[in-house]
Length: 282
Image (cartoon, rainbow, N blue to C red; front, top):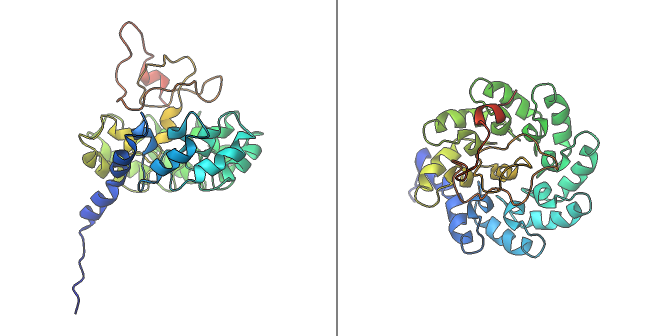
């Protein structure tokens, strides 16, 4: 009789959590932004996607952030016909659905590329209409949503974090809130780390990524692509941990802050808005 090896749950979680680091190691020679490219990666697929996307856009690390395949690069062509921000729209895409979502969402929000980022259907639009009643950031909360689950998550996150829309962006359950609680004290940026999480694996990833990059919260975040959203008047050298209030022109000014460095203090001689007033959600 052949023996069956049963691995402890903690070991399995640690193994799964190593995937963003595996991707990072495969991508670090390709791009200056490996934490963004490999954010929440399941394997090294973002690195392969990056190679295909480099021929299409100046922002391949954003387009292929956390990609499962080369689908974001395929989506890019269709998205280029409908938006000036195809890299954001197709980030996380599994097919060309984000472009169709964008066309429908353009009638209901000024931020359709963000709302439909990585969408698999028009579900983000229905989520957006409901989310307008509870948050100032409905496009962020419902980005890539597959149902109205982000609203339930948002309700559970209120009082737990000042950044419930970021934490619950595209959530499929209330798992981001549990992840956030597990991450407290282990990172300065638990809402970014656990944004859209399906379990506590981003927290396990933090330990695996120790010594790999200073920006572990981004590398281990399922929604690392949201790091690209900043205010239009931010100094390009700010290292910002969270999306600022929605900008004009939409949705962010290039170049976005360097995702290879942990957000901390603004450059010498400059001033930074008070995070407690700028980031806090309604």
